[in-house]
Image (tube, rainbow, N blue to C red; front, side, top):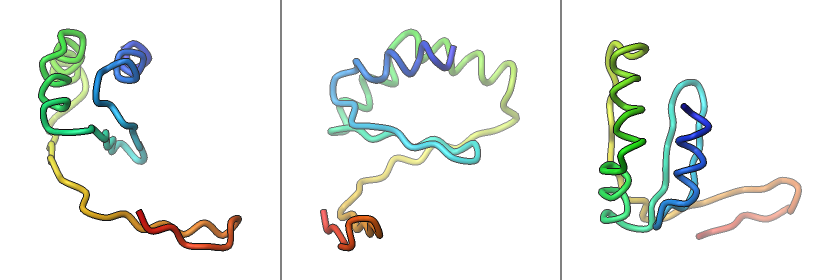
Length: 82
């Protein structure tokens, strides 16, 4: 199911990317409407229900707005400010 969800994610309008580590997944969206559309996507809803039934004892969702990003890349020898 995860691969199916990921293939749908990349084709979802407004999807910007995803980071995942240690059981935490962060998805990035162009705007709040794009996020709402993803929440209503039928395959995503099925996956959520399966997760609740099979794997999760609890989970938390946070919706945040990124105001600024700073990045350092040693290989490039500079710091990016986005």
